Length: 281
Image (cartoon, rainbow, N blue to C red; front, top):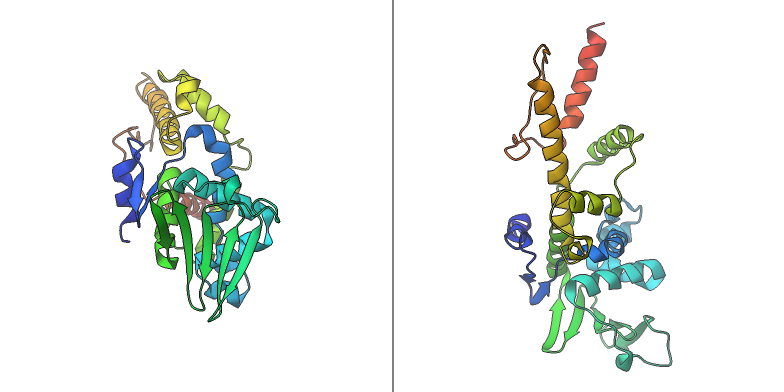
């Protein structure tokens, strides 16, 4: 699917589920922010940085199957995302009582095919020699997602729920520069927790904390960001308009009508400013 971000943005503002490849992808509510923030790690692993040629050659869906078969925490994260976003469910009546709930059970088929059941869940993997299917059984029928379709679903979930998510590919050198820059920039900053963000939105809007529970996660993050931008703009404008104060080289950026700036431009701007200071000595 092309232009996934543009497609997702049509649905986000009013918290609508996003239809794609036979499933309706539900937005995560703020009440599940802690669950989601941990679980989404399963979709943000850069498997191509793992020094294993077999893993690098795998599709992401096949890679996930490897993870959930070998790591309990990753399996719980995967099931949490499927439950929150794709309507996957645990049903004790479907459980094989000879095995533990959530245990991965394998059925071997002819032609080197395998089916990986997650005990008690309406979810299973159908593994072929050259492809992998994720199958979800709903009351009105079964949906089968192939490797490419699952990649689309995964990106939609990220764009739908992660504020300012960016899926641009980076070279290793550029990634290292970005990570080092923000690590240094934020080293003395305590980043706001979900509680801090919720309190900021509640105290600056008409929402109650109870009402906020039902608001989609990305919208709460967007409101928080908007509150910060508006507050900073009003303070900066107050300083700029003070009589007898001359402010040179200060660009007052409006909190709504922002200039088009690349997300990572500040990295290179700060680097150039440093170079200019050093060369001017």
